[in-house]
Length: 125
Image 1 (cartoon, rainbow, N blue to C red):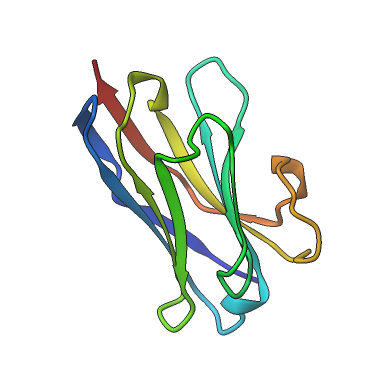
Image 2: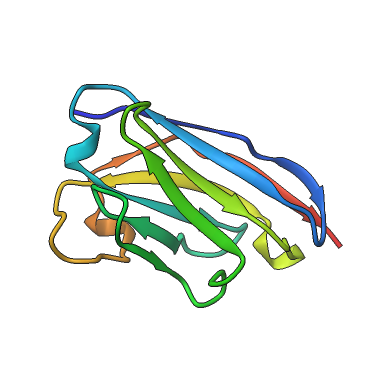
């Protein structure tokens, strides 16, 4: 089992940057692909980015491609989401999640096995 804790959220002006972190417990962190999702008020949880176990393969939602970068440090059991050129529409609670299935790139929240509690990101326009 994996426990995930996000941090790094906050209030930022449009055009600014934030870096989210997700720290994982356990010794099997590198067995999981990791994803970032977000949920705005009144909306469904949506896929943001995913990174493979090794960190070599990354996948992004079209809405964040070119602005967000997902990375991981398996020695530190941590996955990151660097968010640049933030827009008001990026305002949401951001969650990290772990996926035991590492073969197929999956974007549905239903396919992920473990979740953090979320961190709020607010972008003022």
